[in-house]
Length: 386
Image (cartoon, helix red, strand yellow):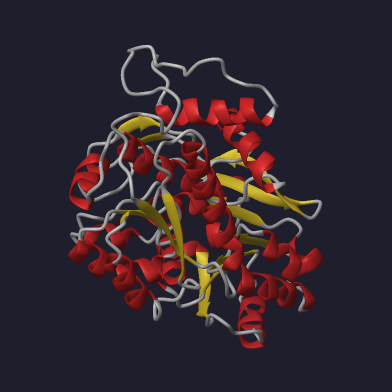
């Protein structure tokens, strides 16, 4: 089977890291488009990719692995490229309020022909119409609200399953694996958190004994904790991000909650354990993101650790895949947004995380959801939720 160009680039990077040299450029089995990365005579020049998401702010921990995953793909491409691809990091801090003006700036930069992001659902909803108007194709490695694909934006794509798949998977795990009897559902009122919590609540039906809403940036959850404990729930599901989740579970445990705490991908970050401390132990985390231990990501994980000094974090591999879709287009000579959009819409290649192909709404054709757990102070892989 023909190896895609991204795999050839990754292998070349690993060989270089090991201190070896290649005597000649490789070729793919069909003798066509895949040799040594960006060295094709037809590759486009003077083009830039952008990251759009939090580089600073309270959710920066989730942005860092996405930046690094895209950076690794671009660095591998540029190693032997005649024309290097630029990389702009647009720091939205994950804020829907900042997203529109930053999206307008990105659209105004003619060199940018593809965006890895936006990272979060709220900023995606705010920036999406602007990217669509400017014809700037985007591939989010992490925004999961299902409604994002329902707006008719032809520029929108995501490289992971949405919460219409993650929500039912989380509910299935709560029902069949934890075997919970009474669930209390909490959300953080964000586009992402409220949407996901609503799906989980609908899926679990009468098993949900009560629910409550907190706010992003809130630190005192005493009212919600009292309500949760009064409900006699044996399981709490939280839809939101790691900063609030860490404080919330600590306060739940301090108030005597002995049940299972279940969260989703917005909490899959070391910052959660830092905030929660010992209270994080036993937490279940769902995520439509492939585990770093999966054999499919071995080459990528080795290259990532060699470049950044640690294992890939949440959505690093999905960001790597997203960037490589754009890079494959650039390698074929695409230099305009219009042509790049057509290329992305018709893309169908094996990536690191899955077969990368989009339907007419920008959703991925291949979707997987995994469960993780906090064990020994670390977030470790548990199982794929079928």
